[in-house]
Image 1 (cartoon, one colour):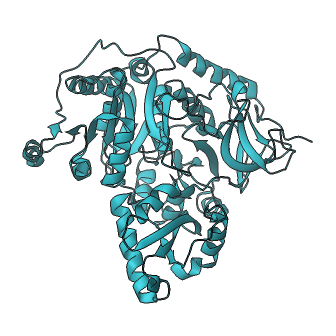
Image 2 (cartoon, rainbow, N blue to C red; image 1 turned 90 degrees about the vertical axis):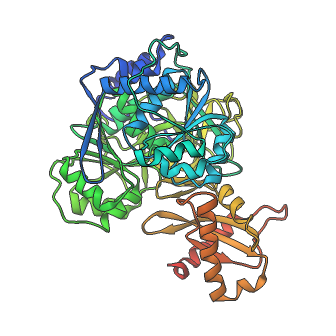
Image 3 (cartoon, rainbow, N blue to C red; image 1 turned 135 degrees about the vertical axis):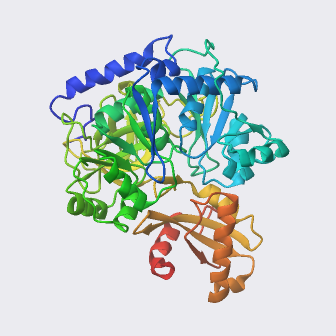
Length: 558
């Protein structure tokens, strides 16, 4: 018996597929623009965002205010010569200036490059160079990371105290004002380049993925049908990554659903206070956020909370057990990728509702057709058989990925030979009812605290340190983060392998080295010094062997 392809998952599915078709039609017009879809078509008085500061003070932004501020951002960028196709990056915290900047970029027909604020200077520089960024807009507290870049640097959110320092640095202030650029001629149509992002980098350097405007349609459908937010919606994911960018900012704009944005750095205590003070009904975050909140539970009551969602890393059963016991709610897990959007999960919409099953990824959302292909060939796997999770391209109208790079034509090994299926890189089984169960990944990506981290970047930074002769990193199970980075290092001084005290001291040095030269979010929590890396006869590192070693050494690094 073959595992089914998944197109409908509950009663009312046909009606929801019609809604998905309606969303697709809104994006299909040859004259459609991002500014119209995400702002100009909505009533000016309607609230787009509710920005919540660390003291819980609220700053609402209407679509009328967003329009004015984004037109001013377009005016400022146009004065720097930004136009159609130019890349503009942001390295900014969450706040009202961020969506105004992004929409201003799109009003000019330029392409947005999001950067994560935890990135180190070298990582920022690498992505800025790879994307061909012409202008980067950053906050003063991030300015040290962008000094010397081969692009124009603009500083936003300036105070009187640091305005003078901007002039001295040679950076350009992103001045707020009333001047607005209106009537700008931007590219039209669903194929317009919108966002230039990078994958995690599993077998080499992170790959460029350029999202067209049509890519947003799948995220809007996911928001409406997969999340189905009610009165008060908050996605706690960071907009420096695809899940946070599209779920907290872009999809709510297109759907006209007000979104809460927490402006400060994540703190579990603050998250509890926000949920309580604002009566959040629908909350979405990575599993790590739930684990952190579990450890900082103030025992407040949240009577309005009714939907919990998760994405970005595997959802371990302990999280669901805790939320059921503490909040009386299941966490609905969702599956997505930078290349895809969000094609599957346990939906909250009543017509798609399916009770979450531990260890399962849910079912396909409307507009997507998923199946499992055999490990040995491109035939469909039997029900319950482990195979390669694949998207059937011609039956998935929300699918927009054509390849990597600026021209979107570097397909790599992501497609079957005949191009009929896109391969996600995940191994799954699909039962007779269409439920997808995650088995493992067929690549080496590490999913830590909601971040997809490729080993190549971390290894590349480690081997630049003079004490490191070779290095390989793998995922190691972690109770709080789901997975953490475990580095196996062959030291240039063999004595480090046996000298426990010296090894501990050097562990701290290498962890700090990765933080400074790659990212504060992606340093190896565990480091093991070994004589040599296990390799195949052809010289490839045997990561399976290292994963086994990581499991046996886990207790040594707690």
